[in-house]
Length: 125
Image 1 (tube, rainbow, N blue to C red):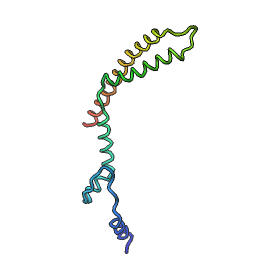
Image 2: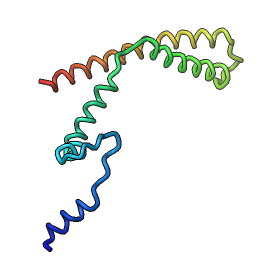
Image 3: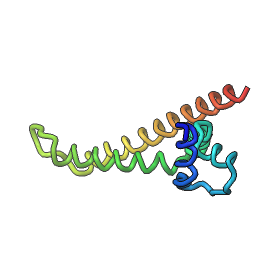
Image 4: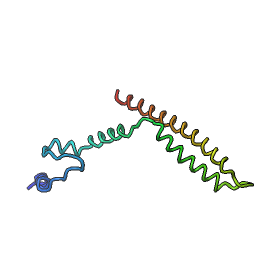
């Protein structure tokens, strides 16, 4: 038996298990498509388009809220000054930080979203 025939017999005796998430149809072309390198590139492209989310104010507000809480904790408890910090002053700085960071986060998200959209439209040409 030749080397080629031995390998063929081994492949037929021990077929590969289908990749997770793919359907095994039993045809050679379907198996080739599901395990080929082209499908990995297609999955990568699909993943890129699925993760592209438009900017929204809710996500920016959540980020701003986390930052405002950190501002308040740092200013109120960790900042060592000549006198004890005022709670209302710390809260005011936290609120100003919340408003500023929420707006900045939204604008940065919008800029990145538009840039990715332009890149995707340019690659489709």
